[in-house]
Length: 266
Image (cartoon, rainbow, N blue to C red; front, top):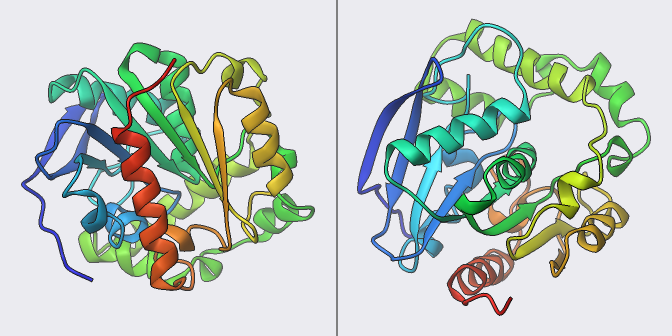
């Protein structure tokens, strides 16, 4: 796998935090990448970016308390993550972009589409959910008992690579866990309000149930559904999951490129 260096890496002062972002490629079509819980740009998208950056202009961010972005007081929320991404895009002059949100990043992406529909050109919701029933039985009971010992080592290493502070890692873990534990179902209107062309992606052995992905696809008018033979995020090379065969990653990247570059017909 070829490596790809960003053409720009910087921080922006956003809603009281210094938000880290990277830009790859020189394409005319923008794609914002929003990582999953506990992750960084590299751990969620390090294998995917080289397959996209020849075709798209990639803006990849690190959310509050993750990777190189510092934390703020108080709890995390998907609504705040969305606001942070919106302000960052405004600061760097991005007026229209596709968004690929993975896992918890998909929750933020849906909130972005709800808050600023004019900003969102296309939406890719990868392994994400909007109601608690989208996660398997026992998930939340297990999460309530979870300690940092169960956090995938690849995600711990990814955080500490850029922020070598075990206390900050612990804080990030606890805030991510608590956000999931206290998650309250969203109204269907969050999804039915989405007007951007949307691609919903899930693995057939994902954390998110296939039935929930089907339900989301039925609520977002005109959306498409892609189910891949994968576990959570393995189809995009996410570091916390065992790698799929290279052709799965290549196929997913080709789908993303094609979806983002094809002009909408409605």
